[in-house]
Length: 350
Image (tube, rainbow, N blue to C red; front, side):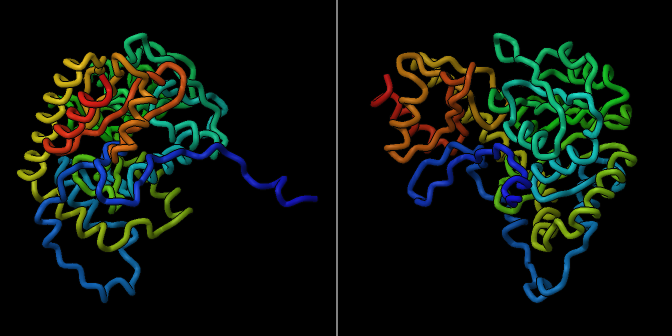
């Protein structure tokens, strides 16, 4: 008998490269180029309190998020980044012998969790223009999960189509992963549907629009019965998921709406300028509702541009996989960073 026979074997998720040098333009992991709100920066955290366990319910953060989204605290679940929340949701809700459904081009952690937890799954092909087709999710399944806007395509599915998917799956859980929805047009979020559908779970993160990827704060909103189910799994796995500083800073972040709106507006404006610049260089750019663009070079392969950029200290994300190997995913940085990127492309990749 060999212990290696009993090791769980999965193909792990591959995160974006984290360069060691600070002297780079890092546009490969969809981080926010602007720092957190001053209300976060000015928070005082008593380090003496770190010797004690944090509140396992993270009640202060739950209450702050419930107040911000105008829901009951019993409808909010928090975790260590949206990945933690999504992983917990997979464990909790996807337990039938029917396959769960998600797009063939989407967040690449979905198949990893499905494999890790032994969940059967089936991928639904995006259309030729890389859109989600709602009718593909109106078939027998064990649950549905998709990002909106999608990643890495940045394309948004309109709220009417999202509701059609939820309606068609009333006896299954539908998870709408809204990591990037704050960069989409107003009225794009599925949160207003939560009170009408007991099978809907909406997942959010602080990593993008809140400029707090380093703190790892994610949360989900759904009807109380769903949240109670998530809590039961959490307390069976790890009671103390949220540390004290994250709870404190997470509360401060949602208290500064003006700064939040200001940084979102900056990123959207820069995104629209950058798209026009890319198109003038002959790039094909998919319509973006996120803090990144998905772009295909006109006169050079995406892989070649990716490698040339990396040599110059500019990091894009390149996915060498069918249907999207001709695209680069480029995070929107500051105006100065994006102007440098455009100049690099003009000088080296045309």
